[in-house]
Length: 387
Image (tube, rainbow, N blue to C red; front, side):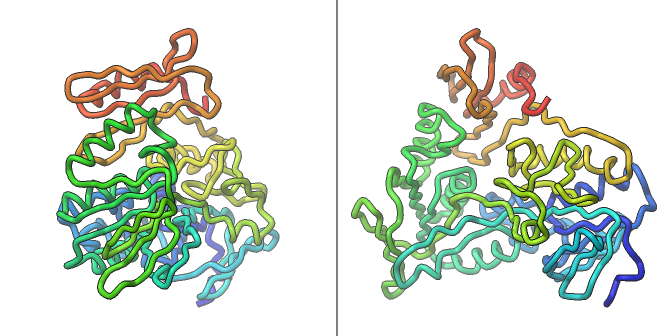
């Protein structure tokens, strides 16, 4: 299957939200430019954020697929090469090497996503640690927890907290372990984190903060998880959710500049001519933002650039929703290094935390429970992330 002869004008690697949103934006501007999507997944479209809420909403992995590959190909009038691995990019010849032959590109978009970070763990069951980063892993996870009561989660960040809430709603017993002193350490001030932890504790989550996992050992039917503080948790399943690292190997091997992600400018261009990057794998002006809203913004700027119409990426304030029904949470963290302090305001049925500068200007917020109603009003007050 050599696609050498029909050099596709635009080739996109990756069928996540980033890849598909770029194609949708392209089709709004140009119905006929040839687009080829290359993906190691089958090429279906599903909502990745729903992986951490699907148990409570009683949806199986299959039910999370909203459109199959054929449907996407028809809808967006494009070629989808599913279950195909990309092994190399030649930025001079403008070709990519894949498991199904070489493909030429006019413009190449890297929508490679990110991998779950895996911490090196000791113990004879270290290989039984599960990560959930795509639909197939999620299907495997659901199979593993069927008929099992106890799930331990390493990581009290966004994904860890969402899975913890979803699992207790699915009547599992959940232990969450994190080196940080609190949940959502990067996003929430202490008072807000404590409010969220308390609500999740009420529904059955057990927290183990300020410690890490030393070893995971198989003990008959269950796992013994030994923590650095000496305590041992007995569980059936161990889920690791310590964070994401952008997939950069393909770009690095091709000599494309990388930082904490694949480095792009405000036009989403990498250091290589005609190669662009977007989504969880990309770093724009020092920012790697693995959320839905930044992807939507970036796709709107990237599509015109791919068609030779200059457009510049801007990021307005983009609050992040933490899907924890026990205490719904919306957070817009202050920029790195922002000077100011958190002001906490307890409201009936919730908490409002405002990060204000010395002059009283709003630079960030965290809204919990009933306070989430303030989201619209407060977002308007925030400065843009990238003006």
